[in-house]
Length: 159
Image: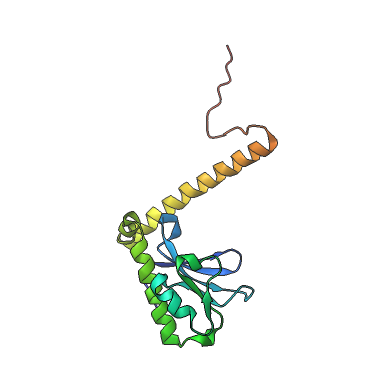
């Protein structure tokens, strides 16, 4: 099953997360699977509030821990739904989340692939630099000493 603009990441140690759009450009997750079987259920996905109550009445489908308020369910075993039903539910989840994306993210997703990939790489560099800056500030706060930014020229003359 191929859905447009889907990316995958491994988060929280053992969850394969499916995103509508890259999360670095404002994409949002629409489904997750448990990679090592240590979590609750085998598949989590967004169903919206309208279908939420209908699906949790199905044997083997429960409210997703931590995500139920947002309209997510957890499938406890793979034999709860037929393959076609999984495909339909995931298509629905993808469509629901796509509709919630900010306009700027939809604009990026509408770009040609090369242009979009370049923009995502640039965004990832910016986020990495911010994370590095936070790490430096955190270390500074813990030690009580300022760390010198080596990218800035140092004024060595004293008056």
